[in-house]
Amino acid sequence: MSFVTTYSEHFILSTHDVTEKARQYARGLMQAGSRKNMDRMAEVVPDAKSRNLQQFLTHSTWDTRSVINHVAQDVNKLIGDKKSTGLIIDESGFAKQGKMSVGTSRQWLGRLGKVDNGQVAVFGALASERFVAPVDVRLYLPGEWTSDRERCDRADIPKNERKFHTKIEFALKIVEQARINRLNYGWVGTDAGYGKGPGFCIALARMSEIFVVDVHSDFFVYLEDPCPYIPEKKTKTGRQIKKRRTDHAPKGVGEIVSSIPESDWTVMELRDTTRGKLKVSAWKQPVYVWDEGSSEVHRWHLLATRTPGSYSDIKISISNAPETTTLKRLSWMQRQRYWVERTFEDAKSECGMADYQVRKWSAWHHHMALVMMAMVFMLSEKIKHEDEYPLLSCADIEDLLSHFLPRRDTTCDEVIRQMEERHRQRKKSIDSHIRRQRLLQMARAVY
Image (cartoon, rainbow, N blue to C red; front, side):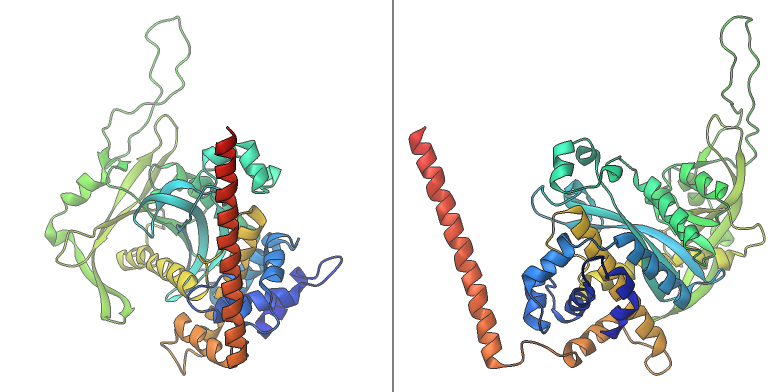
């Protein structure tokens, strides 16, 4: 894949050049079928060896951040735009066995829809209509990891990465990095996981970012200015009162939205889909958001959308978009988050995002950087061929590359050789297991 050579500056190290290994790994992500681990890559990519790819991923010193920043700038050149593009932040989970893989713990994995053992990462992606690609990633380390020095040492987590960060803190870091990279986007969008309270929205507002942040039904707002004030002291003794109060009662957004008359909802078409026009019923009104105790009061939009005729899928958001922003524009911005879910599906299904078999910090980040490179390639191909093949998908591109890139497993002798090698590896694992069991039996007999 000649595409990888545009990133070769990041793979030329002081003592050697690992660009060819990067090319082999990127090809493996496209060619290795449904299980894109390094053993399968070595079976299909000419001249690739599983051990060398493992070395490249785990021990090579190429800089992940410089590659990810390069990816972000390439995506920006393709779809960056102040009006039509949003910076969408979302997390994705990766189910894993055991406890050794960096960041692994029992936590909520959205793809499985339950708490399970796995890793979670916070991603930033640029989304413009149906074109979307990730531009940043941060691996979430639960407190049980950051407080365990020995565990961090085993996973080779850098000393400066061992401080616990919430997912909201990571989201803000992604926005800061997007500004450093000078990415062009018109707003920041997130799901309700980042709208649990006003803090995230207020932080974005202080950064002068426009946002559309989904919130849960128990997010509290005020229907009129709460006019916070510092109450007068009733006695001459005691400390000076500094915390502000209000005489107005807040209301949960769920309660507000549930009381909207049917006549106040507006039905509108937002975009084309494979099933026709996407229609929503939408409603908005100004509300006041106050972080209890502070002096700041914010007058923002409260937005709700749902499927016409249904109340089972209501999406509620808070936005600081300009007052002149139309209801249709706000609704469209809110619904652009859909494309990020699609890019996670493509990344995992077609580019091997979840197929890694690594335990250490650098290997995990190296893998993600290479997957993000592959996603840029996918995006560029879809845009390049949009006029001729407007429905071109990542699955189509993977299928074409799998057929037309040179493959290793094209002769009977090679296929048989690979099968025999797999059998040798299985036999080795079986023998190792038997030896461990015998040693355990001997130890029990002694004690």
